[in-house]
Image 1 (tube, rainbow over the protein chains, first blue to last red):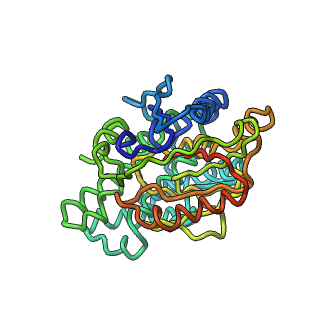
Image 2 (cartoon, each protein chain N blue to C red; image 1 turned 90 degrees about the horizontal axis):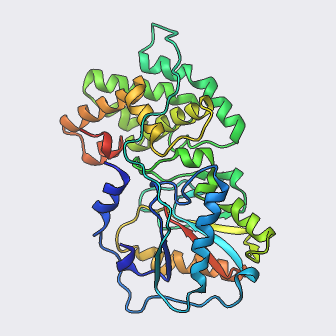
Image 3 (cartoon, rainbow over the protein chains, first blue to last red; image 1 turned 180 degrees about the horizontal axis):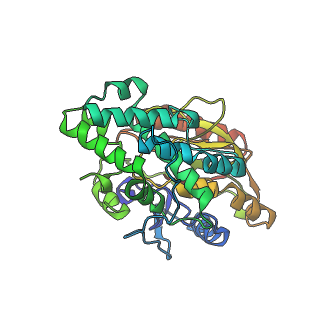
Length: 205
Length: 150
């Protein structure tokens, strides 16, 4: 695509999508990327397209090793109870960084409520309540963002790209609920725009 | 589907075709140049409008990672990198370090964010918001921009 678009100067980096500077928390690595990119300004003519020599492989990433809260309130659906149990971790992460990716549609206080909507979607086969809550893919991102930020508070390292989502969709009750909700919507004839971006492509069967 | 598969699937997406590629030489040494970041990570700060699908406007960002909010919407993109370290998307601290060392002249006080998920024509960005963002940066004395695609 870059070869066809022909921007003035481009440094091609084989890094995970979402991490254009390669390694979060690795200032030296980011610096090497920036120096390589800015060095393209020295080229006498263009368009310039060069490869950054270091690559980051994201194939076969294992799920983040992250604990999940014990069952607390048996009266609640398991995914809802799980999300409530993660709130302290989410708040620790928020306090530590001062920022959150949650809030496209719902704030962190409404994440359990939103998960309850997905529970009822799977139970009833109707997604009307979800559509009333908000754009489905944005609600889904708020829920996943809440979980990923809680997870970041409970691990002692920066995870590899996609390790957090692998943990969410493979290890958590809510992640597996989202996968089931996608199947219900897709197989039930929901508009593709409403289900196709609920979960990443590589988790869609 | 790994990222390389997503890249391969999108490799033949239509893109605008330009008769003459743009290429402007840097007018002063990098060590004297003011550098700004232009990102397609759909960043914004509190108080600015949230991003919506197909939004071709831009947001002006202060030079402060502590205030940026991530708005990009693709579920296929990793966001834990940004959660852990916004510099992986918005390398403002790295640019400050480079300015302090004299590698670059200065860091711009304001930077630009666009939404990355766009149709192949990007008409409004090409004809309106893109030139408007460039004008803003030029008037702020920016000599070079670093584009971080997300």
